[in-house]
Length: 434
Image (cartoon, rainbow, N blue to C red; front, side, top):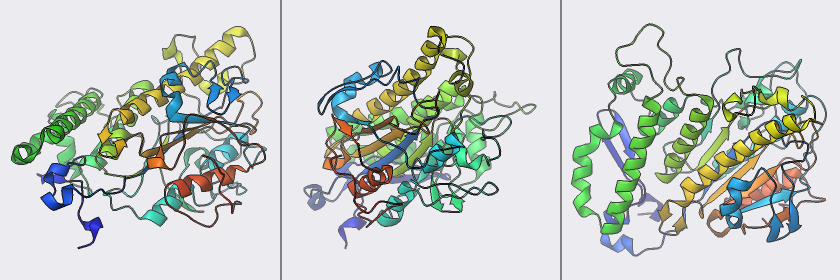
């Protein structure tokens, strides 16, 4: 039997529901428990729009491990030794439409030219997926923000797809992001496209997916050691908490008139936290190892009134002038996105795996479509690399990318994920020193 066939992940299946569990060595045959499997690596790409606030929130100082962050990064300070930030990382394809070009090249490193049909090139997450062919229920997971009522934003004269899609399986085949946290949750816990009517009925009755597997959980619990029993309890608690938060956004049981699709009752900030929770659960139970999440789309114009800094929409605000009030409001938005990253890193850091934490074994790459929202510059892009990549990364540094191409950084991410492709986009040599 090949070592790969001995999975450290377990599925409980009942009544059309599949519950994926985290690695529980106690369930393995005794001879297999002593074996040291290589750490499982995960790749997550997070995108936020409109860049920085005229460089007044992304002031990186120092060098190497003795670097300082900007005023938008307070929430990330506890993770400074678990992440690296880039200086002088320039996008390769500038020019109008700036947001479309920056979003389309975020994971592809490729230019755009077709103003009728969105097409770019294969993205690095899909290169990794093709190379690794991970044995997970979901090959790769792609998520997006709360829907825009008039459809995703678009630059004048260019299709909105360039701002919407960051993952591409081929130059003409984008991976459309899920905009419902509830649907994303169901993809993980109702694998294989189980009956949507059953899932809907379960949600309306406020039933948990765990309710269908209690007997199976009771069966395996006596076989667990104390450490695995605690791990299982923490995991199931997290599943139920995420599920409950999603149910709170649904319509009331029995409501039919004006009913909305699952998850659309969540506000933008609630939706963002729910999506990050879902991603962490998906990685934790090995439902997928590759995730892309547009926290908002390129050219994004979400309403950030909830921050209490005035009634502002993001893209509009980024071009509203340079008064202290405007700058402070835009800086507050960038800071909010950094707080979401810190929240996500905390979720990963809290999960203990046999080879370290989930953050230790992950590669989290976060970036934006432009460097500066006011000028639309693609120079010195805001980019953050977090996690240890199971030893492939050396976090805790300011990385100077002067003279290196953006494509070479994407190629280096693939190599760090053990997908040593000879080249990507315009790069044949991976960026050194991640």
